Amino acid sequence: MNGAQALLRTLAGCGMELCFANPGTSEMHFVAALDAVPDLRGVLCLFEGVATGAADGYGRMTGRPAAALLHLGPGLANGLANLHNARRANTPLLAIVGDHASYHKRFDAPLESDVDAMAGAMSAWVRRPARPADVGADAAEAVAAAMTPPGRIATLILPADVSWTDGAEPAPPADVRPSAPVADEVIAAAAAALRSGEPCVILLGGVALRQAGLEAASRLSVATSARLLGETFPARHERGAGRPPVERLAYLSEFAAAQLAGTRHLILAGARPPVSFFAYPGQPSTPVPAGCRVSVLAEAGDDVVGALAALAGLVAPDARAVPQQAARPALPDGDLTAQSAAAVIGALLPEAAIVCDEANTSGLWLPGATAGAPPHDWLTLTGGAIGQGLPLATGAAMACPGRRVLALEADGSAMYTISALWTHAREQLDVTTVIFSNRRYAILSMELDRVGAGAAGEAARSLLDLSRPGIDFTALATGMGVPASRATTAAELAAQLGRALAEPGPHLIEAIVPPPF
Image (cartoon, rainbow, N blue to C red; front, side, top):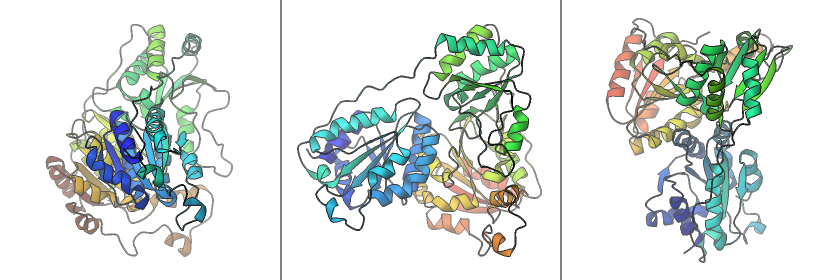
């Protein structure tokens, strides 16, 4: 058995099901081995950033890693932006990077590069098996490393000669370390802060934004009047009617500062300390008010839900969580704007939907419009590297067949990974994509003012404009096999979205909206 065959059999034995792939010559023995290991299915992506983003979406929805098969250093480089997003989401993900044969590397072939250095930039675990006999054990350890709480990127670099040489055997799964329990004294300190009578905020992140964590946090809020906030860009937020609602910390630092004003105790439950996304002249780097004590109840790799439940048992033993009441906006009529589009989505969002939100500035009204919709999952742009939404929807749809996936996309962001639509069509995924087409990088227009760069002249405005020429998303989608339509009024969007959600397979709707500001 050669190294590639042992690798696939080990991954399948570890419970892995999917490999999102954009292979090259160095990975051909891996590709050939797929026919002999039907439990591990290859899914072709036309760009490496789609493969890594799809593996992220799969991992967020299952809690298990998918693989992303990448070709040498340039292939890994093309996938790094969405590996960055996956790293910030704490997604379990296995990157498999083919490399030149070990004896060939010294000749400095045109595709030669420092794969190990690039992998180390985003990975918590990197290994390069030196012999076929090492492949099975290294692969099993890679899967275990990816599943180490709260979820990590593990990268296995597979030299071509190790892949094609016999002498390998599959290995059994390696043990996965469980989440670390939170010490009693840490829980007691958080209880003391909540009982102090001073204004408290509990900032929830990671798994704390799932049902069990939300219910424990809601009980704490009921019993102590502590305010709950969610991290700005959660990896996966379970929300909607029947689930305790949590307002997210604002993206704009001045709005986040207003949300935290007067707070004396900020308790972190699976969330990182708040920080401004960028530096601005004369503005602080953190929205946390002076004099506020920041304490960590549980880090992302800890038993966050267990810590919240223990804290609720101590401070709020008799309190009950307060669920979000069911409510939907009425279907609007008239002009199509980002606000009326949000109302349409809130009115039609189906139960158990998975929303992949990369609407950016056009999504400002989405949280309010969908708060009382039937229970659903909301996935966001965790690392800020745009081009995540369409690949994320790919992986989420493959992870959860039978659930509708709604990809809400800004037009500029969509163009980074537009080829994901081809995989939607090839796999006949139940993904409905709504492109918010305002013909500009609207968020950069806002940031141009916020950084104090001065009035935008013609040269500056041209770098933020997407209208010369306008992008025809319906033509792009149709060309890749996805049925598409264009909406210019709220009624048209409602009719088109209703039809798309009722039919199997992928659809795309280009929603023509003005910039929100």
